[in-house]
Amino acid sequence: MELTIFILRLAVYILAFPMYLLNFLGLWSWICKKWFPYFLVRFSVMYNEQMASKKRELFSNLQEFAGPSGKLSLLEVGCGTGTNFKFYPPGCRVTCIDPNPNFEKFLIKSIAENRHLQFERFVVAAGENMHQVADGSVDVVVCTLVLCSVENQEQILREVCRVLRPVSERVRNLSYMQKLVHTQEYLLSSVCNSTNWK
Image 1 (cartoon, rainbow, N blue to C red):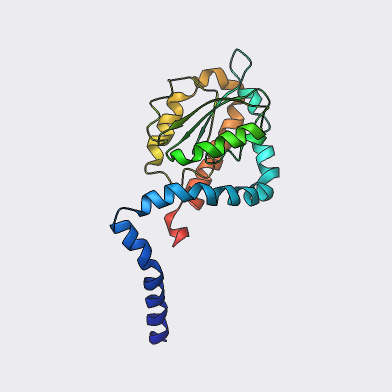
Image 2 (cartoon, one colour):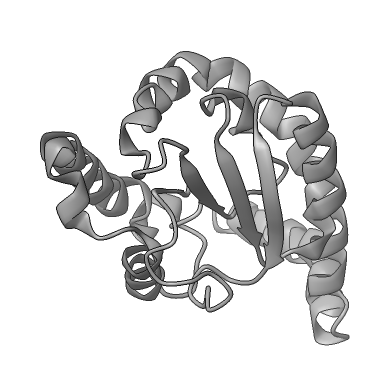
């Protein structure tokens, strides 16, 4: 049994060695940033097929959060390739933030496919530092499959609170927000728990 474990470990070390070497040489991050969008384009299609009904349900009442102008201003943090775009309401003004500049060409393609949206801009930044977005300037912040991969979850949530319109304007949606908070707590405690990924 010990010999089998040793052989399996050795195989994993040999298979992982090129990644360690590329990381040591400072190339791994560049490779990931360059090629991850291509992987995500393919993965997103399958993911959206599986999650379409849940996303429709989750995003169904976004228009209720629209500001006084009646137009919904939405910020998507960690937008990736724009896979959520088709679930946003018509006329929604979308600003996207992602730390990977290589997603921009995929976003442009996704916006072209989702003409019901008004694309505002793409900002290359981490969610923990969204200083390019003004305080209280958006009605809704969407971040799907993001909070598990950020450096500092508390900081990104502080930034989200900073860029959202004041909560007092959304008292009518308090119960919905409470559901989201409870869902968020569940996700952070179960999905993002690092012991689940070992």
